[in-house]
Image (cartoon, rainbow, N blue to C red; front, side, top):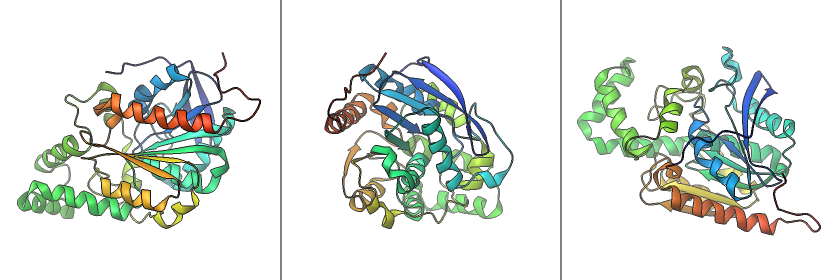
Length: 308
């Protein structure tokens, strides 16, 4: 099991709306820039797993998005909008002088990554979409299909609590807990980094953009859909998904069909976090993809070996 690794560098970076805390592991020109989920989650679960790539010639950069974790937490809900988050990612990349990056987004981070690529594709070498989708309406439809497996009576109970605004009721939360263990993380017990990130969600950000829980989307993201635009993302892309993922294989395949240079890998024993559920298989796939495109992207006269 991956253990916490101390960053080689931690800095605070000014972004639109405040300052964010950025951790960096390793050195060199091959940079993996990680975008965590939520929105409003913390970076812990992505950082503590992916920092291992610093042992394989990559500089791994991971940060708590504004409103999350150790970063500033302003109370202005107008800040929780996609264009501002895109500007935040660019501010981090520019402030650290990262150049062209391998961009990895997980869950909500894939949606943010898609938007970043559509605006700043020239700054991206490759794009890794881990446990994401290109359409929130498709995601919601798939999540509703998953929760139907709880049975008609349980679904009716959940719908009643949602209609009455009583989603904190113990019987509703018990049903959500079952869904989380089936479709968010199937590791038992949950890794400490996953628990920290889930417990650390900022409800102001999450509630504004998504809703009260993973299986109830009523926030500003509810109509977000970029599948038709993803053909413009022409860099090599790796789509990663779990067979039991809340953002289902159907979501992964829709993105695969939309992107001209995408490949997809589905991990049969994973839900939403294969980097914790099947780490050996996951990192084998991710490293092979990165190594292949690192070599292909080598410029004449430049070394791809890490500095320092």
